[in-house]
Length: 198
Image (cartoon, rainbow, N blue to C red):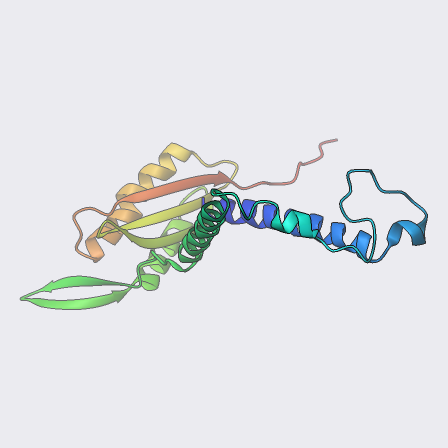
């Protein structure tokens, strides 16, 4: 979801900047006169000596009671949205380490990437699996795992899911002494090029 939001926001910002840049560049460089074309009547900048905003445009709403509250509200909303976007980029839910109870009051720390790698290696050995990507995360204080599997053309998704739950994730739960390890599994097929038959 975050990747989609990032792409949409960057696309909209890029389009807006491109439009404003083209608007200023065409008028500022006096391109219509140099290249011999005319601009539409609604085009705001058609003279290189013209300012982007006229004095009348800059001062039109200053005496209105709603103007400054609206300006501050819009700018405040932009600041809040920008901070939210920034925090969404740096927020890191990936689990760096797990504390394991080894008995007799002792604890051990297991690196999250080590467990991810172990589950990935086991998942890749499964019948019908061409690739695996595992991410360990923490949600609401409980460790969980996200698994993305790339299935071969002959794979049986039901059997792959059953094997993953009972064996690979079961082994992971047992190794870190957890009763439950919530999992989210995403399956996708391996795209092979079409084979020509003669």
